[in-house]
Length: 276
Image (cartoon, rainbow, N blue to C red; front, top):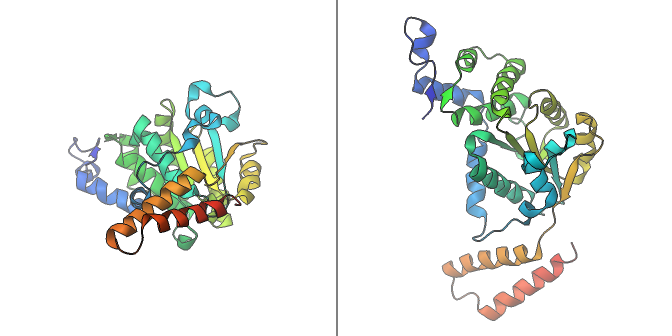
């Protein structure tokens, strides 16, 4: 439960409203988007023993470790691109878990973009969701933020409050992960990328999407060269994932498949995956 820094005082209407229940209700009003729920769903879909080779990539390690980064502004942004079905969203979920395990929830925020939810995924709701994640992981909400939350009116106010919160986290290194950036409406994508310049300061940003948005990221952020990593199906992981799914099916229908048929299916699919 969140402890609001404004609960202790008495004598004003504002202070009387700042109870834990009030804070929770207000945070829910910030945005209808619920990235943590989507994240939990993805965690259940990942096969046991999943290993993400991306974490060992030199560019990823340089992006993650501020002591390894250069003065180049582009180093704070890492793009991961791949074809549909390459596993970008699963990769995002594993990167998020990795960052949270190393730095804690208070330093990591994330958004899962989805073309099926375009009407809700506008800039106001995205900023509100990021702000909600930060405040939900905060032991004590800053007084200035608590007061301002009562009177939020549109994107400008949301951006200012978020900028204030981000500034508090900047010294310790804050991370923002945005999955499937290409699935946002072009106008929303443009506004969000501009916000990455003006609101998120020196935060380290992890992006995934299809290749065609690479030019948008460079053009809108005015960075000629942004670090990027290609996401491709790893054959070992493809086989391990399929084997895991088949084993789940075998538990429910043990008579439908034997080991020989299982191996034939795995060999056939992995062989075709080599041509992707």
